[in-house]
Structures are given as structure tokens and as C-alpha cells.
Length: 188
Image (cartoon, rainbow, N blue to C red; front, side, top):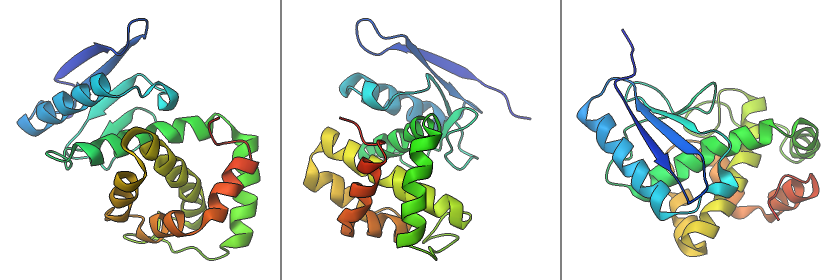
């Protein structure tokens, strides 16, 4: 049986609404990941990438954005990766809120990469998700460059163990950024 064991409410910034970070099972790993995420939210201004204020830490779930942003415990001791995963899932909320812009980018990415890989570790669950993740992962890289600097962000993306083809394209192909920017999805 799943249940939410604990919730931390954080006021991230003086005037920012609270962020709720719940644990699914209340395990030690979930509680520590919740504390680690709370520390990151205190340390970094994530407001440009924050779209949802509810987060659940679930050691049994694959990280996902909807319906509630859910993170795993696998990044204990790796705050940069936890930060990137949180930002990645928040970015899903942002691109979902801009369907026309997203479709413009996806149309061009489908033409550029007509057969992206599907499945772990190279691609996402299907081709549509792989194309979507070219956008999300490029935006994630840009966010991480802002937060951690270019060198550290690129090293972080290069060591991802999933979406490996997608992250490699994002790191190597500047045209992906041009496509995302032309669609109006890139932050100012």
C-alpha cells in the first residue's frame, strides 16, 4: 500500500509560495533525498524552471513529471544529478504548457532525426518521447549551465546513464538549440 508519510513545506525565496516535498514510504533514503532536495532548493534560485510546487520522493518509482513531479532516491550523495533530475521534470511542465511552440520544435526535430532510438538506455519509451526529450534535455542542459557553469553542466549530462543517445545529441548538435530557440521555447 502506498501512502505519503511525510511532507516538508519550503518557502523558497522571500515571497515564493511554499513547495511541498512528500515521501511515498517514509524510508531513510526517501527522507534523506527530501532533505537533499530541500537543501538544493535553498541553495539555488530555481524559479525560472519551477512550474509545479508538489514533489514526491518515491524509491520505487521512475522519475516523472506528471501528475505529480516524482523523484527517486538514486541520487543520494550526488546533488548535481538530483538537481538536474528535478529541473528536467520541471521543464516537462513548462513545455507541456506551450503545445504550439513544442509542436514547431518537434516538427523540425522529426525531420532532422527521422529515426531516433527507442528504449533504455539510448532513447525514451517511443519515438515521440525521444523527440520530446531532445527538447527537454537541451533545456535541461541550458538550465544546468546557468546553475553550475558550462563545464560542470556538460560533464553532468555526459554521465547520464539513460537517454544516452539523446544527451549525446544535445551535447554535440548545436542545431537542436537553434530549433528550440526558433520555436520560442528557450528562456530569455
